[in-house]
Figure (spheres, rainbow, N blue to C red):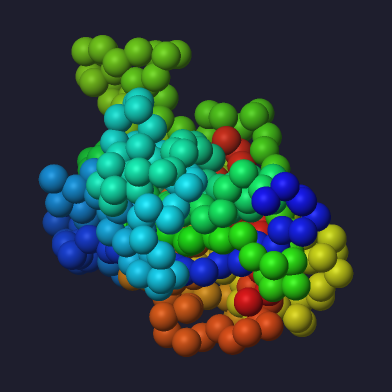
Length: 332
Ligand SMILES: CC(C)(COP(=O)(O)OP(=O)(O)OC[C@H]1O[C@@H](n2cnc3c(N)ncnc32)[C@H](O)[C@@H]1OP(=O)(O)O)[C@@H](O)C(=O)NCCC(=O)NCCS
């Protein structure tokens, strides 16, 4: 396909995979100085999933991908692009999308990963759509896959109660322009906040060493309250800008699918957007924050539970470390 104007984009399949092992708030009470009541009141989280030792992020991503391919009626060989959003890559390099490719046998795909933290999935959806619009790719497999349990300090109660493992995947396919369902994306970043949500050590700034290990710099570190405020502001702004650009109002949106970090953040976003809370999809209670995986997991649940119909507007919105933020608008 070379006629860029003539290419539409639509979601042809969704999938997800959550590891079997459940870690409840009650169990966390025995690990750090916390309570089920504190965690539920401050975050809405009740339990999260923990991947097995032999399941790196790509293993979770591959299972979600096979699920999405099945829903799309496609084989791995049909996929010509795989993009993975993750902050818990299998290795520093090669990129995790190559590991997913190998696991599912998608031998015709170009593979790369994006590290936009919890905004990762809205980023890769915008990137995947843009690449399909060039005419170079027909079926993009977009995967959010995280084994955050591998970068969490299980002695730090201020972070370990918040996160979990899981993966979600979406197949985005080229289609006739009249079948296009992908309407608009707004992405943003602010590098002034690189140190409020990060893994300080183990990269090229502070290479891995005995000191990194001793000072626990290889674990996720966060200034919770600062992140909270910025999260609400950036998500609301991205959602508003996206709706305005697509000429859609808040009343048109069937599902607001926000990044699942904390129910208080989701409630604040819905309130500021003046949207009824029933239209905001929430599953953070079951899985905690799975970073780049929360949105495709939520989307898959919405689809598999028959909660979305043709013509419904679905607004995905996220924020994360970087800072990064963004929104995608889809008409189902
Ligand atoms: C992390 C978060 C839940 C903390 O809630 P908060 O209301 O801001 O709580 P604070 O950080 O002010 O801590 C309040 C108290 O609870 C304590 N506390 C922290 N974690 C705790 C836990 N798991 N159990 C019990 N007490 C805890 C703190 O030590 C503090 O005690 P102190 O007052 O004696 O110092 C909240 O800031 C948040 O959700 N931030 C956004 C995080 C996020 O979404 N990150 C992902 C971005 S993608």
